[in-house]
Image (cartoon, rainbow, N blue to C red; front, top):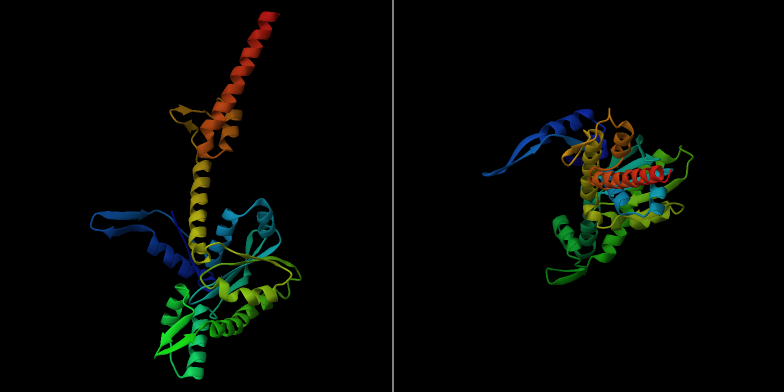
Length: 287
């Protein structure tokens, strides 16, 4: 099982989804001695990864908030700015989309602003590396340039532009947006405008936002596989088998539990049955 994501606009293209699935499924040789077999690939819209990641790390209270009403998961990536609208946990494709007002555009704006003011051109790649390394001041051509003011100005400008399609799509819904989820490498750059434009909504920044989508893809794949195993349970527990014909009630009871918990549940039920049997025998002797 392999789970990955596509920008929302590409996910809406069934041909692109099919093409990616065909590319991923099959045998992949890693090196001369190892190969990996992908039997099934699942493709989701990228921001769904951040949504799934937050679900895994959240309390019951937060779960209720993000799975009830309208939630928007926003993923400011390097080349695309994507958002997915979910209503009661279901994706609203008609309200979801992709913008090109992404992190790369923010950094290009920073580069242009620095050049206009100082005459020094700092490349987007250099700026990206500086942000990753938390380097606020860059030494270029013997000049120390504080990039923080430029980043703040550029992120406000670009994030406002990025949010316009979201607001436009949701304008006619006449429903309150209960929560906003920010994930992806550019989450911090888009946070201020998000909080201003969605002041009545609860804002969540996913922990380790840079890896939020990847973590979410893992959880989606893991849970999908677990549910598949549960649905296909053949009644076996270790070297024993519970027959759905001979013991239908016991089979249905154990079927509800995860594979890991079946032995524990089976032992608990067996203990209860033994105690009940002992009490029955004792009562017969007393009679």
